[in-house]
Length: 237
Image 1 (cartoon, one colour):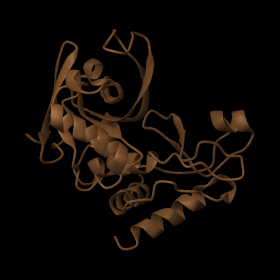
Image 2: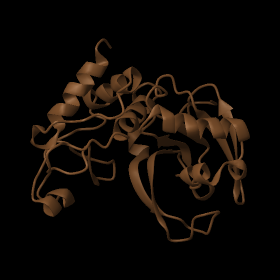
Image 3: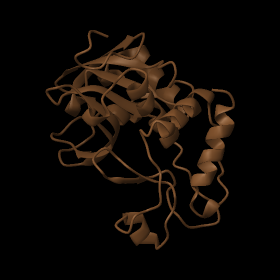
Image 4: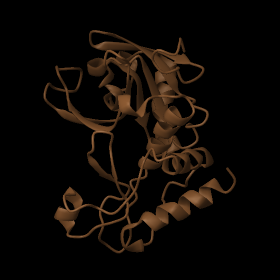
């Protein structure tokens, strides 16, 4: 898709509440822009004005055209608030939406068997997390038994993505990661996904950092794969 960065920038600017200036502090990458646009064009994510029941509208007394709903019908927004001199882009949502869209459009993952921006609580005490502590996962795709087949961990920048992916590739086990890195994906101990995809600008297409996950107690082993796994029921990865 030619001029994907320009087209994505223009779209993001039109979605800014009040058409305020949008400082994009981490430059957009071509691959995330291509799939962000595809996700919007194909209706994977549909933006619109905040409805009367929207929590952000109630909090700020102002709406914005950047409102969208998760598969569970929960409200989310491309920008953090609808007021102020500038519009504060939730930068992570660009690769997040892009990776989610790519999994559905190219690989055939079922949006009806997925979650996006899901809030959870830990079911048990882990390494640095305690039972009942809340957290958010970026995207999950489920098999027929409701188990997580593919977990997407989205990052706002290539630097953040590389830092996490490099440590996983180097050490291969959660217990050997530095505490500051391990805490970002400690949830795998609780959720036990079959695969984890660390996605960010420049690593959406192709998916560069995909790992098969095996959980044993309070440790997890990560084995890097060469591509995104096929959806459940379609065959082996």
